[in-house]
Image (cartoon, rainbow, N blue to C red; front, top):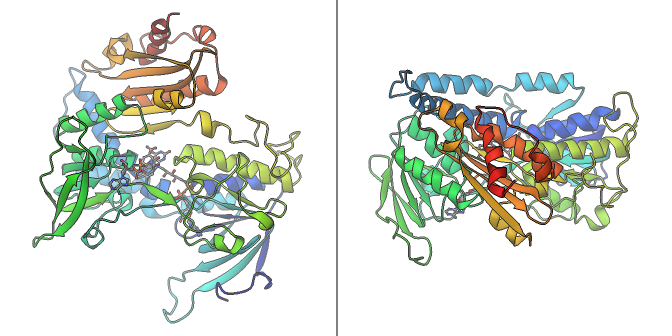
Length: 519
Ligand SMILES: Cc1cc2nc3c(=O)[nH]c(=O)nc-3n(C[C@H](O)[C@H](O)[C@H](O)COP(=O)(O)OP(=O)(O)OC[C@H]3O[C@@H](n4cnc5c(N)ncnc54)[C@H](O)[C@@H]3O)c2cc1C
Ligand SMILES: NC(=O)c1ccc[n+]([C@@H]2O[C@H](COP(=O)([O-])OP(=O)(O)OC[C@H]3O[C@@H](n4cnc5c(N)ncnc54)[C@H](O)[C@@H]3O)[C@@H](O)[C@H]2O)c1
C-alpha cells in the first residue's frame, strides 16, 4: 500500500493511541498516555531516544565536560593540570554516553512500559490514521519498503522534533557542511572549523572544538546568544576569545568556495547597517570544515499533515493542553496532540518532556479510565476539548510561557529562566533588576581562585515576585532550579528572604541579590 491509499482502507493494526516520534518527548507522552489502560503504539523512524540522546544534549555535554573540569581545576592552587585533553578518551566517553548509537537500552524501557514500538517513518493519512513505512535493512532494493497502516481509536500525539536549517549561501551545500549531528558524532577533530551562527549550538560547539584542539572561528550576524541577556552573550564572547576562538560578530557568510586541498574559504560581508561600534573583521576565513548552526525548524514537512488540512513545514500550533489547533472540520473529538520541538514553543528536552507529560495525561484522562489503578490523574478531570485548562493544573503546560529554563553549557555557563529584562518590559511589567558579582560571594572564592560570573533577578515590582533570573559562571547550571521554583511559585520576595542559602556556597548570591533589592 502506498501513501496514495485511501484513509477508509482497513487498518493493519489498531491502538487506542499512536505517538509519532520516539524522542524524549514522544517517550514521555506515550508512557503517560498508557497509564489509564490505553494501548499505545510508539512510531520511531531512527533511534528510540531521539536527537537528544544520540546527536544533541548527551554527546554535546559529554564533549564539553572535560574542558570545564580542566578550567575549574586550573583555578584551584595545588592541582596539577596538563595542557591538552586526551581526545581519544573524550571521544570514547562520548561513544559510551550515546551507547554507540544503539538504542536497545531505550527499546527495553519502551517494552517494559508496556508500549508497542513500531519502527518506521510515520505519516498521517487522515484523522486518526497513520501509515508507517519501514526500511528493511536486508531487503532487496527493488522491493517496495514495507508499509503498515495504523488506526488510533482515540488520539494521535506528534513528537517528531525538529531539523536543522541550512541557509541559502552560495556554495554552502556543496561544501558538505556539518550540522550538529556530525559535530556531536565527530571521529576526527578537524584542524580548523568555521561555525556559522551565534546561538546555542554555535557557542557550545565552539567551546567543545576549541577544547578538542581545533582552530575555531565563529561567524555570527548579530551578538552571541541573542535571546539571553546581552551581558551574558558578551561574557561568552569574551571567554571564547580567551580560549583562542576568532569570534566575528555582525558578519554574514556570503559564499563558501572550495579549495584545492579539500578545505573551504568563507567570503564575508557586513551583516547589517553600521551601528557605530567596531567594524567587523570581514577578511575571508579558510578552514578544513564548516558547521552550520543557524537554527532548527519543526519537523512536519514529511508528516502528511496536509491530509488533515494543516500546512507542512510549519510548527504544529497547540493550546495549553497540547491539542493541535487549526484542524477545522477535522478536529472531531479532539484527536490530534503535539509536544516538543515540533510545536515551535520551546526547543529544550526538559520543557518538551513536560509538554509530553501534559499531552499524555490529557489523553489518558480523556479517553481512558482516569481512576484506573495507579493513574496519576485519579480524581482530576481534563477540561472539555478546546476549553481553556485551569492554569497550573496537570492538564496545562502553563510553565511554557512564564518559566521555561535553559542552560547553555558554554564556559561560562549561561543559565536562565523566565523573563529577560527586555522581554519583561516588552510584556508591560514594571520591573526592577538587580545584579550581583558572583566573585564576591564566599562560596565562589572557595571554589576557585579566579571564579568569575554574575547573577541577575528580574522582579515584578508591583507584586514583588521574581519573573526572571540569569546566572552566568562555572556550574551556573546547578543554581538555576532554585530560580525556576521561585518563578513558578511566585514566592513574594519578603518570604524568599527566609530561604537562607548555606554558607559558603555560590547560592549565597540569593541573599546578596535580595539585599541589593533593598531587603
Ligand atoms: C546540538 C544540540 C544540543 C542540545 N542540547 C540540549 C541540552 O543540553 N539540553 C536541552 O534541554 N536541550 C538540548 N537540545 C535540544 C533538544 O535536543 C531538543 O529540544 C529535544 O531533542 C526535543 O525532543 P523531541 O522529542 O521533541 O525531538 P527529537 O529529540 O528530535 O526526537 C524526535 C524523534 O522523532 C523521530 N521522527 C521524526 N519524524 C518521524 C516520523 N515521521 N515518523 C517516525 N519517527 C519520526 C525522530 O527520528 C526522533 O527520534 C539540543 C539540541 C541540539 C541540536
Ligand atoms: N543547552 C541547550 O539547551 C541547547 C543546546 C543546543 C541547542 N539547543 C536548542 O536547539 C535549538 C537550535 O539551536 P541553534 O543554535 O541552531 O539555534 P538558535 O536559534 O539558538 O541560534 C541560531 C543562530 O543562527 C543565526 N542565524 C539564523 N539564520 C541565519 C542565517 N541565515 N545566516 C547566519 N546566521 C543565521 C541566528 O542569528 C542565531 O545566532 C535551539 O532552539 C536550542 O534551544 C539547546
